[in-house]
Image (cartoon, rainbow, N blue to C red; front, side, top):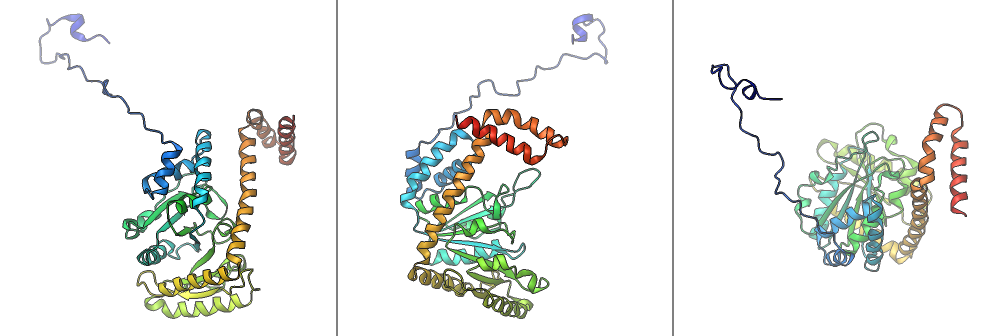
Length: 366
């Protein structure tokens, strides 16, 4: 728009005249040049991981968790090179009902474990929203004391809808942490309480955290999760809740006696503890060491590791096939059309899926 004074001059010199303003500077500095971020090589990643560099380890985990195809090859090479340096840690899965105090418990017992001379890695899995697919990743902020311990590495990761509340790449993250020198690894699940198969298939010991006084004790005794547990800890056994915790302990101990003997031949134990008052934690850790000695002596520890390796071989095959299917150009071009036919009731879900799979396998089989 032309300025008023460019058209009429300054013959109307009055208080209502609008003078030309000062020309505004550009919003973006024209001399600014964004520095290109150095992309680390695989050798640089390996050097940092083996040296125990937390920053490089975090970047490597981010690379492993990335969904970008260009990151996949380098991530797999890093994992492959870390494998000879892995397998020397104790992997402990920790789950429990929401509100059982998992983060507070991990901070309390983790601080004790670190003071015993261990290097601890905490992989905290945060639930992802089904709508926005986002996660708060706030577990690290709850562990205010533990996060400042130089012997502890805390890594929150989104579950992204994975089974059992375990992040999609948690097993690979374990390998990287072990290569970085961490000899104790805690995996904190989101606490779904019903489908913990995934975390059970990647840990040496499974610890179930419960609380007393939260209603019917039988509500917490779910056969599936109880059969997986190698140890049960009744948390928040402090103040006026101590008596209820002792009663809950007897209930859970009686329930465990009704189950058949596990493959490990270890009869799960039940403890009471207080994460706030730091009571009962040393007894729990002594129980962990007893379990490891027992299963190491009867050979179950190594058999379990071999079984898990086989399980994750098949899981990796399933994941690779699923990703290859959805990234196929012909599938991507036709799947929207099939979806519309299913929604319009012109084709059943099963027929649509079968036709897409037949076309896909027919094309890759040629």
